[in-house]
Amino acid sequence: MTNVLATNISFTINGTPRTLSLAPWVSLLDALREHLDLTGTKKGCDHGQCGACTVLCDGKRTLSCLTLAVMKNGSNITTIEGVGQPGRLHALQQAFIDHDAFQCGYCTPGQICSAIGMLQEGRAQTREEVKELMSGNLCRCGANNYIIDAIMEVKDQPR
Image (cartoon, helix red, strand yellow):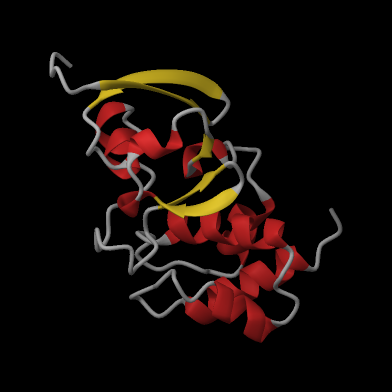
């Protein structure tokens, strides 16, 4: 980028150090999708209301569409591409498959990243608490019950 307003931003993304030169108004979502080709993170509403853009920043759930990339300089970021690998899926990815917890699949990356962050928070003990803490992630296809089933299965697994 030749823009004089560009700022060098360094992150560790999915375990790999990366440095980008970005304008200060570039969202984390656009940095991931347009500058790093990590298209697993989805742009849904672009207003922080649907959760499709959820990634983990330093282990915490983050709406990447509402976060400026410059705000995460030095952070460890995990996108859906860093959650599991073919043949070595994360337990939540496998549970989503087992419970048919997706229909169109558009929201699935954000749902899985959000669920991982929520489980790391350790606050959700009941199905109702899981539903409440996942309420910022919308599934327009109506697979919410299956998503909660998948999360409950993994929540109850020994770690």
